[in-house]
Length: 386
Length: 136
Image (cartoon, rainbow over all chains, first blue to last red; front, side, top):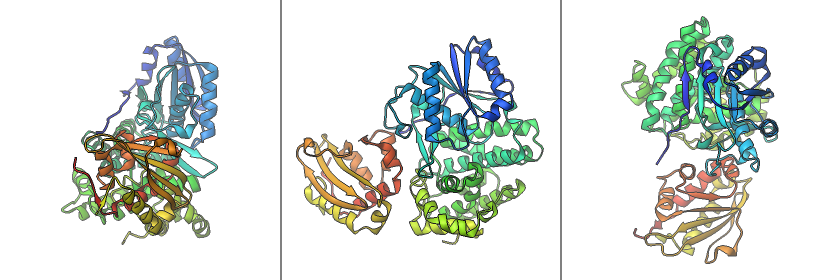
């Protein structure tokens, strides 16, 4: 038994105007200061106003939102009493909005108690709209909530199928202001979601096609979105991110996410940059354990894939080529982390990765020693040979 | 072979856990005891309750309890025999089992999700026991 969850997805040009058609009284917009400065919050408020919905803004979401931020946002919701929660921004804002929504509905819960085994009983007070302004996390379409435990310096994968958004608005106009670095980081996140959604042990018939389509869209359009930012490439990448979100959100991710979550929590590396960096290494590691499906992805992309090993190698080469086009780091060393800093934090990096929920859905689960070697090889940029 | 629904089996699990370096390392921060409950159904007429006390990478106590009120464990995980068999034979990932509610958990799921490596090593120890399951 398994499930496929999805919001109603409104996409394409002018999708944001759909907000003027919804019914309700009050909306709490969960976002960050940058969205306010860019004028996106005003646009959302304008459309809501046309629908007769008043709005209040909680713009305190930081990168890698903390458990405390989710609690503060929930308090803002409890004070205001909205019937819509609107998550506007990148993955951080949308994940925070999901957590705010759950804690608003269920103030008896602590954020780290949001889990799939509880019946949350949502939608008694409000419903959720997610509006991405970056093209990568796919958080608009997933039920996962990633919050940071700042004290323990690790990211927590939370969430329940119940907290998938009611409506996701995927309007490419909101992605046009992304600078090239953010386009590259978030685009690599989408690619990693798509590849790991297809190759993790929880992959399934319903998610496979979405993942393959998203992989192709990223390879076809991410370089153009990064180099030229042309509208067609932007729109395709915005769609690719959401499609990848639907794909991996209904399967799961794998080792590149375990390593990326760990690195991100310890060294504050942007999520997409971290998982994209690790992806070639984890493919090289996983294919040596068997039971992988990289050749199928390579064939779909028209790459040489006479065997699983050749397909994996082709895919790794293509990913490394893409990283180069996007001027993305391909080693931990290139992130500016000194050898001393890296060595000092290596035990914490390994401990976090071992206990990441994406580790258990990897086809080959590393031992403690193998995790350490994976980090070291990725630091030095060595091909995996174990 | 050791019969699954027996004191001998849960004591064998305790021994495997205490011999496992991998479990000791993965669960070094774990504090919490369990009831693993085999629900009635098929050959299981009454619930069978395994009590396992896990503490900092070691198993301190393991036995079958006749009365659920005997202990107040931090976690209670229950499932029918068929689901437990799939977990022990590594056909069902326990986390996936929880998500699909084939395994039911009472207790702090967040604590388990922070220690997935320990959960995985615990299952690995189960697979080392030569287990004879009752016919279904």
